[in-house]
Length: 212
Image 1 (cartoon, rainbow, N blue to C red):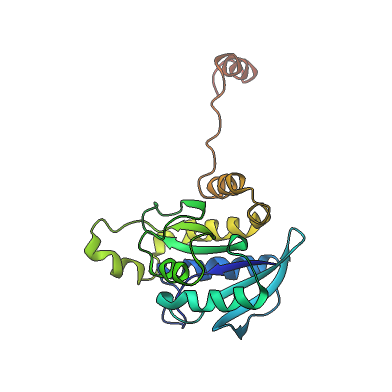
Image 2 (spheres, rainbow, N blue to C red):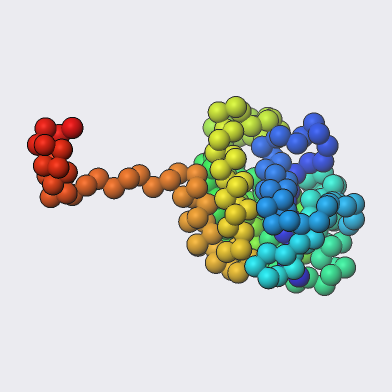
């Protein structure tokens, strides 16, 4: 069994905060792949389903961000899931808004949710870093993450969440580079290729030589 964890804070007052994009990601993945309803367990909310033929447990800790590791460890211990089969979705201020990076192992970079998980299960889990941008001043970071996404963010947030869910099979299969590429294309579609000079000339002839 794989364990997918979304980080955030519980309660409707936090639901649309940038800090809760991990919750949003897990909700979208669970809906897209037909997971069963979430239920209270392991100091969080859990739902079960299948992605790419593998059984998956989705978890949203209800402990508040700073104690997320308690919930993750409870689920991990119950199912005897090795840390390498755990993937955590979380907000990342050091990535531009809309950017997504997958990382396996490593440090917590000061993220309080990851810090708690490190303390309980160690560093050898995967994480999907969801860029929310930096406010430009370290003194404004708390206010930035604990505020709702701006209206201008709505489209890229929707695109990212949809792509995370649609291509989740790649992540489950360990195809991290392909997963990141698919999500990136959903947020910033490639520009149409400019026609080569010969193609442009041919097209102009087809239109009667007037360029229309």
